[in-house]
Structures are given as C-alpha cells and as structure tokens.
Amino acid sequence: MKRLVLLGGGHAHLAVLKSLAERPLDGWQVQLVTPFRRQIYSGMLPGWVAGHYAIDECAIALDALAERGRVALTVTACTDLDLSANTIACADGSTVPFDLLSIDTGPEPALHHLPGVLEHALPIRPIEGFVAAWPGLVDRIARQRHRFDLVVLGAGAAGVELALAIHRRALTEGWSHLRTTLIGSADLPLEGVAGRARHHLGQLLAQREIRWIGERRAVRFAPNRIDFTQGASVGFDACLAVTGAAAPAWPAAAGLATDPAGFIRVGRTLQATRHPHVLAAGDVAAYEDARPKSGVFAVRAGPVLARNLRALSRGDAPAPWTPQQRALYLISTGDERAVAAWGRWTWRGAWVWRWKDRIDRQFVARFGADTAAGG
Ligand SMILES: Cc1cc2nc3c(=O)[nH]c(=O)nc-3n(C[C@H](O)[C@H](O)[C@H](O)COP(=O)(O)OP(=O)(O)OC[C@H]3O[C@@H](n4cnc5c(N)ncnc54)[C@H](O)[C@@H]3O)c2cc1C
Image 1 (cartoon, rainbow, N blue to C red):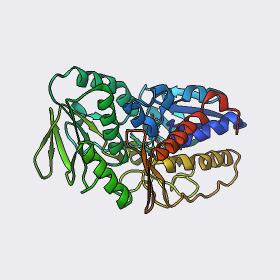
Image 2: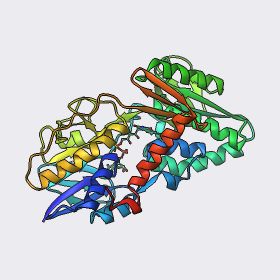
Image 3: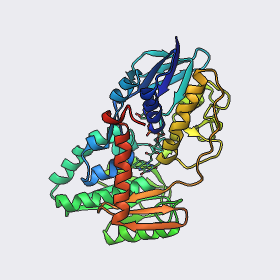
C-alpha cells in the first residue's frame, strides 16, 4: 500500500483531513505527523487572552478529525527530511516513510537573530507553549504589588491584538499596576495594512495608555532588558515575543528549493519546485504568486491541497491555483470591537467584532465532531 504523510496539523491540512473523513483515499495509508493532538486557532488566541473565550472554544481536536478520516496520528515533530530515501526523521527518534508528502507545518518564530530571547522572553509560537505559560504570567502579574512592566515585541496584527487583549484583561482583573509597551520596527504599528486602520489603532493604543515605541530593531535580550540597534534599552518584568514568521531549517537542508528566507518554493499546483511528490501550503510555503504570511491564505489553500493530493494519489494531473490578491484583516481591539481592513478600505465597531467572532467560531465548528460527515 502507498503512503501519504501529512506533516503538521495546520490550517490547510484541516481541509485535507475533513475531505478524507468524507471520502477516504482508496489504496493509500495516510498518516498525520504533528506535535500536538489539537490545533489552537490563532485568530481566537487574543480573545482567549482577553477572557472572551475558554481555550477549548479555540481548539480543533486533530486526533478526532484524523480518526474520522482513518488517518493514523503520530504525535511528534519532523526534525529532518531525506528526499533520496523518502523518509522523515522525527523528534521521538522514529523514521516515517512516504510516497507522497504534504507539508503544512507553519512558521517558526523569527527569533534566530536575537540572543537571549528564549531564556528571557515568552514566544507566541509554538502556540501550545504560549498557552501553557500564559496562566503562570497572569499569576505573576496578579501577585506583584508594585508596577509590572509587560513588553510586547512585534507590532504586526498579532502583536497589536495581544497588547489590546492584555489591556482588556487588566481592566477586568483590576491590574492597575500593569504597564504595557508595544515595540515595532516601523513608525506605526501594523506595517502593510492600510493607513487609516494603522492611524486608528495607533490612536487606540494611546487612548488606552499602551506605550508605543516605533522604529526599533531588537538585537539582544538580557534578563529583564532588550537592547536595540539604536536608542535606549527597554526594561521589562515580562516580554512576549511576537516577531513574525521565519522558516524552519530542515526544508532547505533536505534540498527542497526554497526562497531566500528558507520557505519551500511551490508551483501553482502546490508541488515543490524540484520535488513533485512533495506538496506544501500555508506559511511554510513560498507560493509562485507571492503572498504575505497569513492564516487566510493557508485556509484558502486547504481545499486545493485536498483535491491535488487526491488527484496525485490516482495518478491524475493536479490543478493549478492562484491565491486571491488580498486578505481581509480583522483585528480585534480587546473590547468586543474590531477593525477590518481590506486594501484601502477600513471599517470598525462592535459589528465588526461580531462578524469576526462568527467567522472564527464557524471555522472551529467546521472541523468539530458533529460536522465531520457534512459538506
Ligand atoms: C496571536 C496570533 C493571531 C493571529 N491572527 C490571525 C488572523 O486573525 N488572521 C490571519 O489570517 N492570520 C492570523 N495569524 C497568523 C496565522 O496564525 C498564520 O498565518 C497561520 O497559522 C498559518 O497557518 P499554517 O497552516 O501555515 O500553520 P499553523 O497554523 O502554524 O500550523 C502548523 C501546524 O504544524 C505543526 N508543526 C509545527 N512544526 C512541525 C514539525 N516540525 N513537524 C510536524 N508538525 C509541525 C504545528 O503544531 C501546527 O499543527 C495570527 C497569528 C498569531 C500568532
């Protein structure tokens, strides 16, 4: 029997697993290799920090989804790939063979250039690591009697949402001694998003007394201090590192074609440029039509990946895909309101939050137990 291995339980593989639950692949053994039994939906993580959701409401059970698709689950991470033997080396010491490989392992946190960061800061990824550590940080903030300085390093959508979510949590928990600082490399938060949304969020940070420090590039962490290429160091009691997406080292080391940052180059069929029996989607992939790293594109790639894996398993030609030009940004502001940005257009208010909340809950529910057999 031939073997299809799904590496990583990311957004695109959720659609593949759901498709397999609806219709198995004849004549193929399918195996999912991923380090956690559940997938936390990152879009709802700031809502969990703010206190709007319980963690179970943000989680998709990969083990149950795999079982419904008759997919064997191996709970470990890939550490290496051998493309001459077609095997994956795993963190638990096992070796997994494949005939067809699909990779959706997401990004690593962009921290390689920051000595000391892993010792002195809490990275947002892996998300399970953050989820495990956050209650301890909540406890430390609650117990400290004097001022507590919390720094969020990284001012993309995730960093901004987290800073605003923490502000909301501080209000509800009565942490009047908490001072939050958001630090980014551009002059305003949210580089790449339309100007009006950036200005609005900048104003919101100021109104909520979240200190904004722009145009800073961190170079090193010491205990309770970040140093920058220029400007004064910033001290902290705790720091969350939300510094964007980096590529894992193993795809390039294995000989897969990658872009200069190390992300796997794939053509329009999602097949790796030099290795057509390897497919990749989501943040780990560098699409032929380059797109920003965003859950939106990982989600959109899912049905395409499912169809093309099915076609390749039957010896049929896979179909090409062109990702949409733009992604809709829905940025929650911690107070059950949100800002939407679509190209130049911006909307905001409580209705935007209700819209985001509905989309996010529906996404998680789509992969839940009672919808597995549905369309
Ligand atoms: C706080 C936060 C909020 C965000 N909000 C949004 C948002 O609202 N909208 C949006 O579009 N984007 C958002 N993003 C970005 C979004 O999370 C990513 O773009 C998205 O997760 C990418 O999906 P993916 O499928 O590529 O990878 P992921 O969702 O990261 O999934 C990767 C999977 O692979 C597994 N894995 C990792 N390494 C290995 C390995 N070595 N071997 C095997 N398995 C492995 C992981 O455990 C995980 O199951 C947010 C990010 C954060 C941090």
